[in-house]
Length: 355
Ligand code: 5AD
Image 1: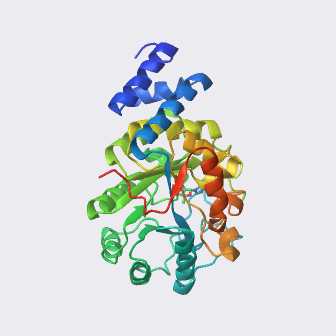
Image 2: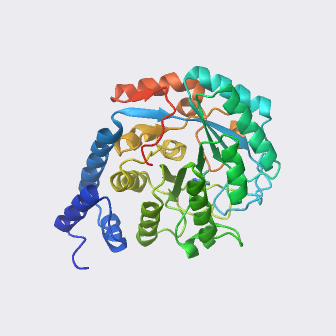
């Protein structure tokens, strides 16, 4: 591969990505490493245009309920890892979750995302019961689970209980990189298998990764793109890695706004029909993060619907935004902010167009 970094070839790569929705791994590396502010601007413009063609200016909202800050896992980047003895631990009761849903439904949410650490308290029976309760009370709503790695039979049970969607970021597609971010015994292969199982069962599946995680480079991002192309998920959540002081990666540099927006744009062009959230992590590193994410091709936001008293404890990374525009009760302000720049926040389940 010669001279791919030159501007002309770069634009050819962009044309190919936009029209064919695919690049080879080497082409991804060239596109990512060869980006300049001017070229990126062009990519983001095309990504937004693609989103407009597929979804219009509609922005979907999901109410995020952080179920538990207990975690049996010890991921090296995450603030609620088991090894962080200073983390504040809590778990929500069914009543508390249902009251979050009630508040959320009134605000206009038609998707509830139950996200939590890998907390053994939430047995298959308990999760299934909770899903059943929510679906019974809110049959017009989608229930999304984000509870980590489980066996295929557990995923099947949750699905049978009524769960519609499952979010599980693959974090990195590269096995060696995966091992450097996760405790012994975890592997990219298992994570990928979980995602394939979920898709197979019939869930709408969300995957994704952190931008700028320690050890990431263009080659590994290229592998992420190839993996996501093959998985073809209904949603892809990406946000910058943000170091947390009580983790082994406390002193690593965080991911940048610039690269995060660039990767959102790349994802929109590769997977035009996928849902792309403008994530809390992105909003945590820049006050206009959400709008910038939308301008790069994102079309989902996930405000925090957790009980206010527990929000601080779900402390994945330093400075995680949980008030202001991240708070579901301030949805009106988000709607105003986004409508000022031409978007329409809709009351809708917001199902993905990916089949
Ligand atoms: N910075 C950014 N994102 C993080 N996550 C966990 N820890 C961090 C961090 N330090 C992300 C992971 C996980 C999601 C729930 O939060 O990608 O999948």
